[in-house]
Length: 486
Image (cartoon, rainbow, N blue to C red; front, top):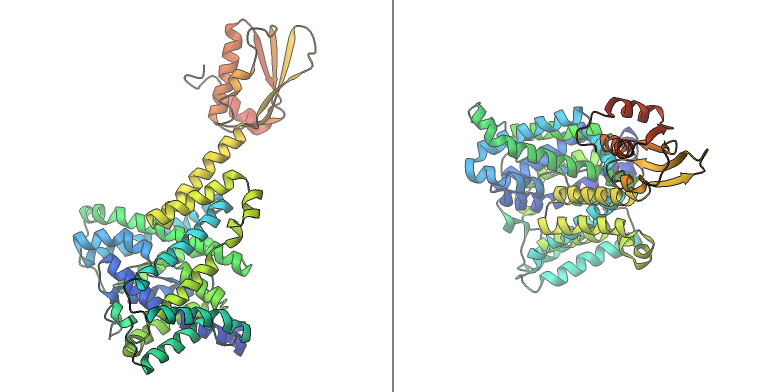
C-alpha cells in the first residue's frame, strides 16, 4: 500500500477502481435492501461500513465486502417476523460467530474444496450475475437496449486504446451524460429507491437480552455467519488466483466478523465479500491494494449522501452493461471447451456441473459449494475404493498362504475386502501382508476383524503383518473391541 501511495500511476488506478466499484454498489445495495425488506439506506450504509472496515481488518487486499444478496436472503425472515432491531442484533451476533470461527481456524477448511468446485462456483456466479441483470432488460423502453450495447462496446474497445482510465467508469459517465443531455426517458438509479441524505449513526438494537431472543436470532445468525464466510473465503481464493498472490484466509475470516459487528452497530444489514464488485476492482480496474477497498466505501457514502441527485440520474443501462461484462469476464470459458471436457475426468465435470446447477436453482452459493464438495467426496471415495487389491504371494510352504493387500484401507475401500479371500480352500495358516497398505479408520479394523473371525470359524490361524506404526497403533487399540465386526 505504501508503494501505491508513492506511485501516482498506481494511486490513480486504486482511486478510479474505488470510484467504479462505488457506482456499481449503489443499485446492488438498494436491491439487496429490498430483498431483505428494509429501507435502502440500511443496505447502503452497510456497504459503506463493510467496505471501510474490511479495508483495515481483512486479509485479502483489493477485495470488496458489502451488503450481498446471499446474506439478504438469510436474514429476510427476521425482518418480516421481528423487525429491524432483531435484524441488527442478528448481524452483530453473526459477526461474533464469524470472529470465533476465524480464530478457531475455520479458514483452513478451504483446502478441502476441490478445484472442480471452485470452477463451478465461479461459473455459477457468472451466470447469477448475468441473470440478475435480466429484470432490467425486460419491459423497459427500447432505448435501454442500444445503451447497453454501446456501454459494452466501450468496455471492449477502450482498453485497446488506453488503460489510463477504467473502461467501466468511462461507459458509466458517457451514457449518463448522453441520457441527461438528451432527456432520454430510461430507468435510472434513482428509480431503484430513495437515497439517504444523512450520515450513518450509532444504532443500539432494542431487544431483550434473554435466552428467548438468542433462540430467535441464533439460527439466522449462524446461517448468515456460515454463508458469509464461505462466500468471502471462496472469493479471496479466486482473487489469489487472479492476482497470483497469497492472502491470509484466517485474518479474512475474523475480519469479516469484525466488519459485520461494526456494521450492526451502525444499523446496517451486514454482508460479506462481493465477487462481482471485486472482479470489477481487480480485473476491470486493475486495483491491487486496500486503498481501492477503502475508497469504494468512502466514495459510496459521498455519492449517495452528497451527490444523491446526480447519482440518481445514472441510467441503469450503464450499470447493466458493466455487470454483463463482469459476468463474461468471470466465467471460466476454458472449462466448457470441448477439448477440455474430453480431457477432463467425468467425475470432475460432474462435480462442476452439480455445483453450477444447485447454485443457479437455489440462488445460494453456499448451498452449491456444499453440494459440490459432497459430490466430489462421494465420487472420490467411489474411485479410490477400487484401488485396493488383494494379491496372492508365493507360498513359503504348503501349509501357509500369503496375501498382500495393496492400497489404502478406509470405510469405502475396506467394504469389499472381506470377499477377496478363499476361506474354505486356504491352508491352515494364512498371512495377510499390509506393508503396501495403510489402515485409516475403524471401519478398516472392523473389516480385518471380520476376516480373522471367518478364518477362525474354519479352524484356521491368521497373522496380520507389515502394518506401519500408525496403522499398528490403530489396529492394536481397536481390534476385537468393535461390536458387530464379524
